[in-house]
Image (cartoon, rainbow, N blue to C red; front, top):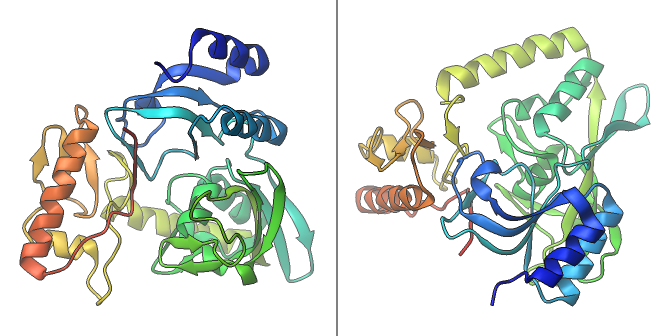
Amino acid sequence: METFDREIKSRLRERFGNTIRFDEPMSRHTYFRVGGPADAFAAPENLDDLAEMIRWCREEAIPFLVIGGGSNLLVTDGGIAGMVIVMTGNLKLIETAVETEESVVVMAMAGAKLQALCRFAVENGFEGLNFALGIPGTVGGAVIMNAGTATGSMADIIESVNIMRPDTGKMQRIDKERLDFTYRTLSWKRAVPDADRQPPIVLDAQCHLKRSDPLKLADEARAILERRRNRQPTNAASAGCFFKNPTGGRTAGELIDKAGLKGISVGGATVSSKHANFIINTGSASATDILALMQIVQDRVADTFHLELEPEVKIVGR
C-alpha cells in the first residue's frame, strides 16, 4: 500500500494547495543533486501551516523529515518515505530584534539562507558572523550542525533559539545556557529530555553581534570568500566537507589526501582534487556512487592511519 492514497492526497491538496507535491525528486532539493523521490514534499507558508502539517503526520502515523536547503544532506536513490517538510518557503525573515550602542541581537528564521544572514550583518555593520561566509545552507541547519570554521561557529553567537515540539506542535524558547554545542553538533538533552526520540524543529535563532564598521567587515568578507574559492571546489555539486575532522590535529582533508585518494572516482562521484574532504557530483553521480566512494575513503583512511572518519553529511532515505 502506498503511503499516500488518492483520498489522502486529495485532502492534503485541498488544505495546502500548491505548497504540497507528491513523488517529488529530492535531487531538486539537495546540493549534491542526487536522491530519489519523497512520497510527499511540503513547503509551509507560515508557522501555523508547519504546525498543522506536523499534527497531520502525527495523527496519521506518517513519518516526516524537516529539512532546510539540502546543503548537508545525502538522500539515497530509494527516496524518502512519508513527508519532507522544507523550511525555505516563506520562513526566512531576518530582522534586528534588540539594539544597544555596542551590540545587537538579530533574529533569523530557520529557512533563511546562512549567507543572507551574513550579508545582512556585513551591510549593517554587525560583527561576529564573518566566520560563516561561504558556508552553504540555512540558519536552522547551521544551528543544528553548529556550523563553523577554524575561526568560529554558531555556538559563539547564538543567544537563544525558538523551537517547535513535534510531539505537541507547541513553540518554546531555549536560551543558550541550556544548549550543549560541541564540534558540528547540538545536543538538546538538557532542554528537551526526549529529543533523541523526537528532535525539536528549529524555528529561528537570535544571534548576538557587535557593532562595527561595514566597510571593514566588507573588506574582510571579500578576503574570506576569495580564500574559499581558491581552496575549495565552490562551483561543484557537493555537500561541503563530507567528513568531520577527527581529534588529534590532522584534518579529514589532510588524511584523505595523504592516503592518495584525491581524484578517485566511483561512477559520477569524485574526491575533489582541490580539497580532499569534498566529494563532488561531476554531473552523473547517483547517491549509490557517493556512498560507495564514502566507504572506499573510510576504509583506506582506516587502513592507513587507524582512524575512523565519521560523515558530517546527514544520510537519509530508504
